[in-house]
Length: 272
Image 1 (spheres, rainbow, N blue to C red):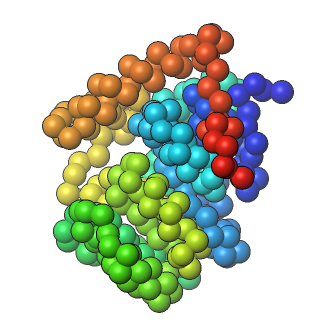
Image 2: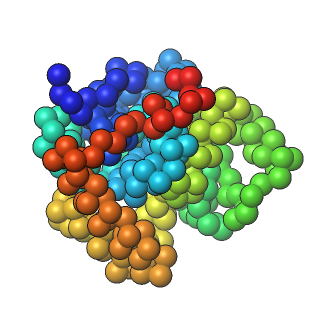
């Protein structure tokens, strides 16, 4: 048995990266699972996770549990793809922006209703317009941009009612990691749509507000460098702290010098 294999969830094989279970799949399979969950009203959430998410889970076991309980933890960054392949798993990158486009293309018949939650002022509206131009026929149930502060209970209840009354099947969440994952896990039981998907910067990318790294840089695991160059003040701490720590911990794990247990085993109150 592969020592990095973890229990599957919803039939999707997972492998451990510093104790975080990452789903071993590709874009086509990821899209197919989401559509199946919509048809079955599975009611789960999807996280698109790279090095940043793994390191957040290393520092915060509760966040690690949120990833563990997701229906799917897609390998959003090429470093996770390389790690998984080196450990005997078959997978390709499932990049959040690509997952959004794939699911839009698959639902141009209007059979699945989409809701956009997050982004800055006006971003969700621009995103909706751009996607409807690109994918005529998609059904958009609604959109909402929350204020950049903690919500009151009354505001949160209003958001729940708005989303539930919209008839949405998929809620796309663009709040950045770890905020979007925490929101999805906390709201999952209160929301009627079948699947919540946290895609972070995909809102800005597809709205045309921020550039994406060239595909070659993405495939060479250098997307972080492109994003650091375009948003240095916001991202320098994330990349210049997390990337070296990730490589150091990965080195220790690979050589058997350090064992990183899944967060669910570290939390006494986790019943999953």
